Image 1 (cartoon, rainbow, N blue to C red):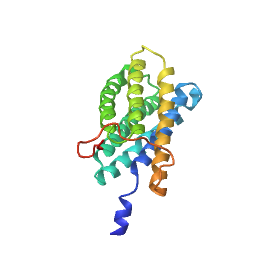
Image 2: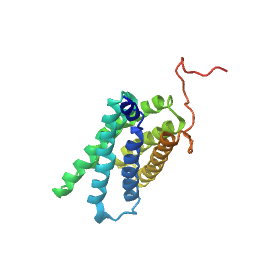
Image 3: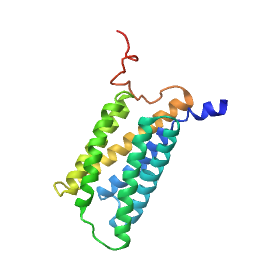
Image 4: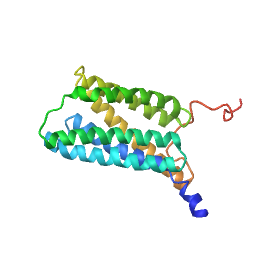
Amino acid sequence: MAGDEHARRIDVLAIGLFGLAVGALTLGTAQLGLIPERDHIGTLVIALAFGGIVQILAGITDIRYHEQLGGTALTMYGFFWATVCTVKLVSASNNSQLDMVLFAPINLVYFFFSAAMVYLTAYRNTTLCALHIVITGTFLLTFLARLGQISELLPGIFHVLLGFMAFYHAIASLTVAFTGHALLPLGPPLLYHRADKPRS
């Protein structure tokens, strides 16, 4: 019984966010030209493993712990990374050139999904809400890039920013879980449920 109670205190979100951090930082540095084009396959594999598989596994575990918000976000973002990276890997293995507009619809859908997550995570903490604001902006910029309206520079910058923010939240969550103290502040919720709203 005590072991089960301890297991339910594990911050699975931190694992998923660490995966997101690795995937986003790898992709972002590649978009900024800091990773050579010859390493394109390696970049996709890293993004698939960390951005896709790690987030999906963390999301499934979060759902088992009855954390619907975190579980939904992690699994859905994980499937995004897994799908896009797999399609690009298959394309590279066949030496076929995909039209980038193929990825425009999925980026647009995830833009709206992330916008909804901004509102929902405002009930958690400031950092998580800010993270989803950046995620929403990243999907919008990536959508515009897929339509050829902008270059990969801005999406690359946002992916790097996203990676650092995800890493910060993961470390902050872990320090709270293991020390009981907020060594790195996550900030208060921006919105409150009626029953939780502090009285002035």
